[in-house]
Length: 323
Image (cartoon, rainbow, N blue to C red; front, side):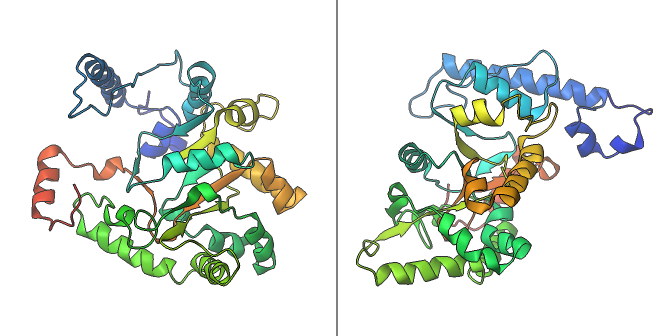
């Protein structure tokens, strides 16, 4: 536990907690949090209201005997509890901000064995191709473009996904106009990006080809990433369990996050073997519908609002049609 003897290295509260160092009060609060969570899960099973189902239905809490960290806790779940061929990983402080094509993404993965991981876009990787070209140079633009996938399973109704769609109109701003303004500004930045320009170029070529995009359809892209984001993602269970967590490769450290150690391994592999071959070993991609809006967001405990304050903010915020 954290006390007056805690070293300077862990003087930052958030960093200390990431490393499993907490005060007595934080330890007490966490124990209470887990008990409340177990209670919610139990109540959801006992009282299944079809009209207003609990978000905790079909949910259970599993505790490890000792602290293992996020990475090894996920490894334990994959080994002991996950029986499906694909798994969606959602950290406790992540949220899906708008309707997201989860089922369609799984179908694309099922029909294309190259796809082992699909990360749902977030603010920091919405323009990933720009980040890539900024790091490696425009000389790799064509090779990057050749690795982008456009699965037919992700050729979706333009009324549901893409710019000015049902998905974007149902973005959850949480009642905050500032967030809404920030996202609108991000859309404008996105539309000036290389990421978006590449899409527009592909779209123009596609529409003049012998196989144009059907009317009323939006083609979602899977952009290769060399960073394994712990943010909301869908992954092939076998790939995760038998490759990523293979003890021989030591790509995930006890007490740490998957992305912290695995991502540098991906980067070094790509630099050693080349973009196409190096990336194929990991098969990780990011999903984008070219709307300029991300699919997922981060819940910051530092900006937590109690029920009364949140209700007050929501009442004072003009309605945008969202629930």
